[in-house]
Image (cartoon, rainbow over all chains, first blue to last red; front, top):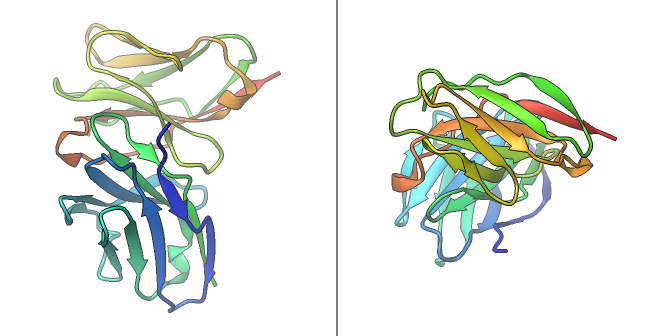
Amino acid sequence: EPEVTQTPSHQVTQMGQEVILRCVPISNHLYFYWYRQILGQKVEFLVSFYNNEISEKSEIFDDQFSVERPDGSNFTLKIRSTKLEDSAMYFCASVMNYGYTFGSGTRLTVV
Amino acid sequence: DAKTTQPTSMDCAEGRAANLPCNHSTISGNEYVYWYRQIHSQGPQYIIHGLKNNETNEMASLIITEDRKSSTLILPHATLRDTAVYYCIAHLGEAAGNKLTFGGGTRVLVKP
């Protein structure tokens, strides 16, 4: 069964550093998403991406965040200057017709 | 997306059917009922969805009341691997890339 692949599975970074989280969505999917889940809290929508541009973003997705799909396969989330409160699981998802497929996530720890 | 209400937690015996209720009294006519689950900090996993009719797939069955104000997800023979948080979401569907809005879900513990 096709999968959404995320790397790395765990990243530790110092506050103020830039991080890039990587995702390889399912190849024929059209819509791509990033969600995050702070430990013990709900899964929260960050951003959706379609046709090489952002289609919707949440209030969380401020100027420190950016997304790219540079080569038609990888889909990346960049956090420019990480804060302690960015520590969370970050999930990538993609969808074609119905039923999102989520990756297994990247656990980001900001110290 | 319409608000959904689910019990916070429930236990289920291994091998028995697990019936997970969800209330969505303000659901609009074009919103589907979707169910996802999340096993211990893994990515959410799609289970099933429906609009009006009952649906069944290899994972579960979905029963939607005639007035569409509530639904029940049925796991016919729960296993220990079904222990997870189950989310009921009223959603317009994936057309136009509509996002999912997750609530707190129901934490299901399947016991031997």
